[in-house]
Figure 1 (tube, rainbow, N blue to C red):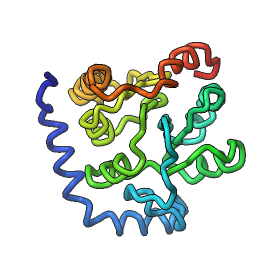
Figure 2: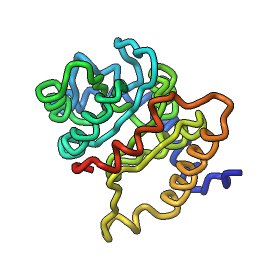
Figure 3: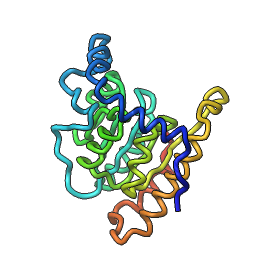
Length: 210
């Protein structure tokens, strides 16, 4: 059984729910600064005009341009297995890179703000089969909500600097336990994993960019 949430995460979840009414003000400010795409602002609240494709859907998340480009080789290997890709990032520059350099069948979405309500909308709409997080862009509600849905999660190329490690505090071990718990519970679930996903291990282990 997964340990209860530590106090820091319980407080974070309450605060991230309470500040939802302030989201329009935050969004307007970011729009003025050119940090959001006005045509796709709904994605930040977990809403999408795109339709989820049928079959397995691997969700890959990277914070910005560097992480998105680092996933390119892995994405190509997954496409070769006929697996559809949902790629999320958090910056307008990364979205422009995806539109310019990646194949048209790659679905790009802005990652939702880390509020339980927005994250739930995102996960309910896309229902990913597997989540791959690049490096250390780990949002607590995103991890916890994914674990609650028994979504298998893998941290790729994860690393933490000496400066950022103390700030992770007690929250990082809790998130790590939930990643492990989600993978375990998914493997024990009655619903079988899509047949193409076991081949993912070979694709990730041989990818030079990850």
